[in-house]
Length: 304
Image 1: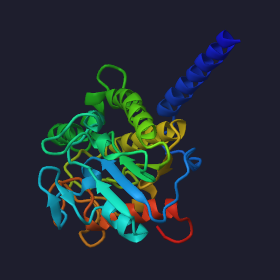
Image 2: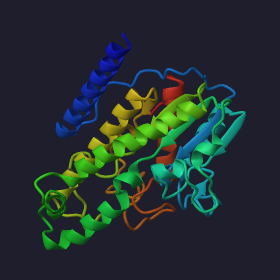
Image 3: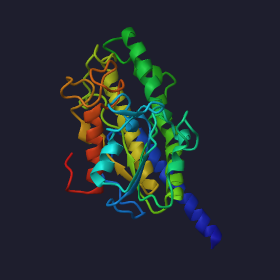
């Protein structure tokens, strides 16, 4: 009987792996279905809320910066969510530059982020994986290659030179790292409602470009858009398989990418016009992500 159970579990894992790889290899569109409610309870009223994440969570350069080591703003989306929920306890340990390893390892004066959790935590938001995937280096590489073929796709050719798209491989490599983080969150905060927050829309969803404001080659814009959608699709699937609720921030931010005029954009370009880091959400972007989190927590009460 025990052997049958083990065999069944192994088969289940194989089915998940096949499903995951098929999803990455297919259309880049984010799955439309909504992740199921987390297995753990935990309401939002009087929450003991802990926020984990990277710079998209911490809000670099957005006033008011309250932690220079981590470039953390008190107007990032966790702070806005905590204020709306009137959380009884709020710990924001998000940190610019964080990878999944920093859930267990310190960053300067910021301790291991998982240490902020306890068995009494009732709400946890997690936004991680972008730096494991290599957001910063990819943007730099694509900008550097653009002058070689301004109307072509030199970045796509670079990452596909081996015959296999290396960014798709990096997304697959990041998946088990994110899964390990969520397993640790559930282990340390077993009663918490866990929300995994995806990444917003950085580039025009219609595939158009805006060089030289965003210095990518014309046909690399849709390539990078599709890559971002594959990353979010992976994060959605990993959240589902690890009993976390996925918060889509891509859909609510379409039309406010870094190519839009300053008054309309929620993501700053590589030369920001407002107080925010390059290729990162500005204050309006953090507000949009906060609305998405609150809409997940309290459906019908917060618009997107």
